Amino acid sequence: MDLKNVLQLRPTQPEDLDVLFPIHTDPEGLNQAAFTAKDPTDKSAFVAHWTKCLNDPTMINKTVWLVNELVGTLDYWLLGKEPNLSYWIDKTHRGKGIGTAALQLFLKEIDTRPLFARIAYDNLGSQRLLQKCGFKKYDEGLHFANARQAEIKELLFRLD
Image (cartoon, rainbow, N blue to C red; front, side, top):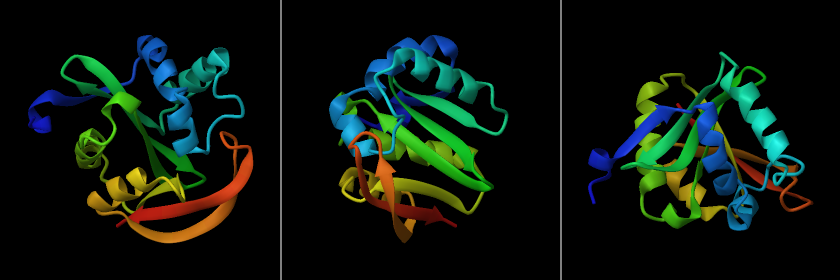
């Protein structure tokens, strides 16, 4: 399947949140993401967080669509003054190149450089995705991961 012909990025809308909640609360995905909300299964907190994000003019929130199915998110946000991105692809669509293709499309819309991404040290899929899109690992640190209830190593990537 040629993903360029069937993949679209659209601005995230409030009506997308009911579809996104189960995607973002998949236990395997939560473990991979690691750095999540304190209680990622709290739907009211999820909606409140996303509502705030959707109303923040410094953020860019996109949904990833495969044909007519919402399969994930891509987000641009600031950590202090540092521009970051994050992404989440539904578990049934991971490992098929969708995340890489979606991020490549997103990077055409975001011309801010350098651009940063932070991932759990053992999220090998995210490491490959970022490297395929030109990101390079530049640092690491220890941070508390709510999804794992432990301090773990976080890898920091940068795209110049």
